[in-house]
Amino acid sequence: MFNLGVCFEFGQGVRQCGATALRWYRRASRRGHTRAAFRLGHAFWWARLGLQRDPRRAVRWFRRAAG
Image (cartoon, rainbow, N blue to C red; front, side, top):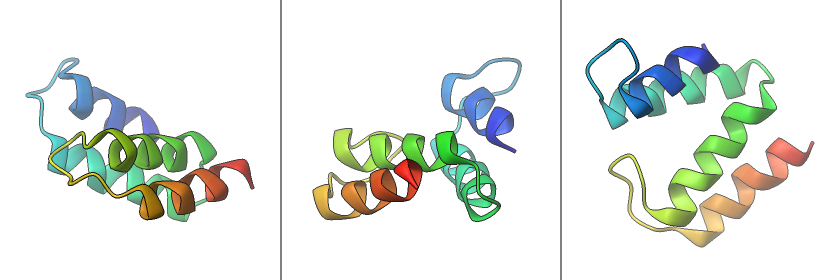
């Protein structure tokens, strides 16, 4: 699931789509994938993948990634 998120985020082998990348990252994170949680934090911190910058949500995802 994480790898699918990466593919959609960067357009590797598929059409680039931030919304789809977010969906895959969230699914992977719910199943305990820490790098997916980090990518979500990164997206909120730097306003990537179509998200608004939201430092509070970013920190929540970073904390989840740090476990």
